[in-house]
Image (tube, rainbow, N blue to C red):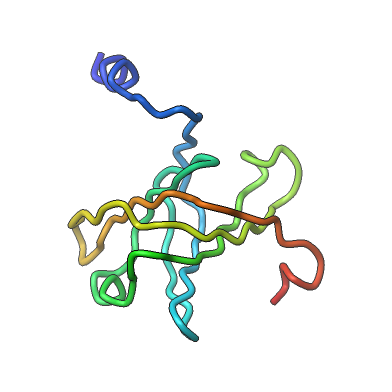
Length: 114
């Protein structure tokens, strides 16, 4: 029943996928490991260490590796630019962050390996 209520109150315009996928934030010349809680074509919610969360500003750039369950083929790496919407304290020294995806591109060949 709680799931039905959540779906009724959810005003998002695009389908969200509850998925735990690797995400790498790019902050200056540093790569910060994180992982997704859920993802859509317009936004992402992810977790990263509390210590690393101080490195994250309002505008973010990140790479996310989508598994075959989402792409319906092989793993796919997506490079995104976005805007941080909110931060939430999570357990186990983690911070949760929600971001709007402003633009993205699919990384192919040599770009994906870099």
